[in-house]
Length: 528
Image (cartoon, rainbow, N blue to C red; front, side):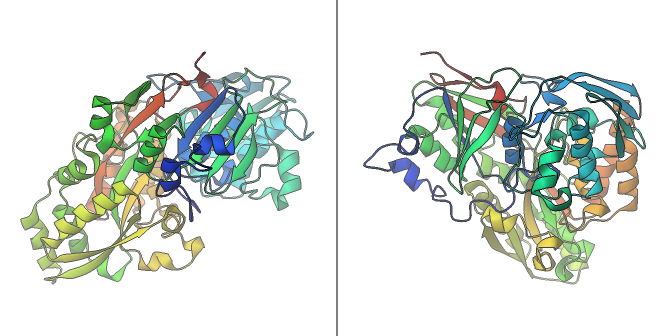
């Protein structure tokens, strides 16, 4: 899913970083101007704010970061250098056979607001609701058929066919969050989307305050029956641009943030006082997509001309200071299905690109490239613009804020998808290749498949791959799936990105997944 998405930061006062850098209230840093109280408080930065806090309709990793704090799951990701999971509300959980998983819940886990104890019926409701309502993230539950309840604390998940990714894509991630059936049914008609107002909480934190486009405040859940989290409060400030976040950190407004890769070497050479900087390999994927239904891009020769004209190493040098690796597809290194190389060489070939354009009967062409308006995307767009100009293609860049951009290709948001031509995309993933490929099936056309790529063979492979447990055999299917994507001419894979973090060693001991994604409930304060 996307790294940032949805109706985000339209008028953010933090967008340029001007307020953060100067502080407010006669020079007082922003964090102290808004919050005067002292205590065990984590001040962190997010590149966007949530568009929803309903797990059935989640759209971004930043939403999952927050939901991990306010809801419970059967299992959760463990922090550390290797991907792994541990039990959360599940006292026990086991794969009985390829299509059945039995779980037993811990007793005494409560929902807030008088909505009672978390029971198997809430698990059933939470998971089946996603499938029944046919939400955009339904694909992350694979072939789930139903959850059968054995008693208040025990249930059996039944799948129509084996679904291998359930342990890394579903249980510990977005769709695995458990909500209260009683609370949701009262708050949303028919158990529908409750948006940004959770009707009940079941995690170690509750949402105490949310000032749109500025900050989100989480405080301890007094009804939480699990292990006590490290911080009394988590204050998450919305700063959309990495460069602005770096300035905010140096101004003392935040203690934990991701930084831009092109700042990494400079900051490592001369870090701020009491600061540690770390770099993590990422499993995200970034690419240039092409809407094959647009009249200008219907001819595959035009799409192939674009593919071959793009020099990926040049882009990475300019936008990431060479700190990110060239992608061979959507599946990152170290994951099942990662290809050793793409079909098109990273450097491309301008002469071949010109030949494809000639086959399309064109000497010149004007295309629009849609992207986010942050510094990294803007740099990528400028490089692509220069590269395509060498073969006679003029690129007009349409840089947008997240709230506008992330609805561009969605049919449910109007007709803008019809005008979409080239798009610069970033999706986040899980340690299973399913999430790096499933949003390109035909069912996702007009949802997250903005290239409108359709392949019966791709869909067949996608359905089969999730049933195979042997990693070698499974990988072969994902190799072919990425080949099909590239052969369509609709994709030019750029990078799997990387994550660079900066934090104050006198304030926080972070806990992250191996790819640098924060697990806030495991963060610890540093003793004075």
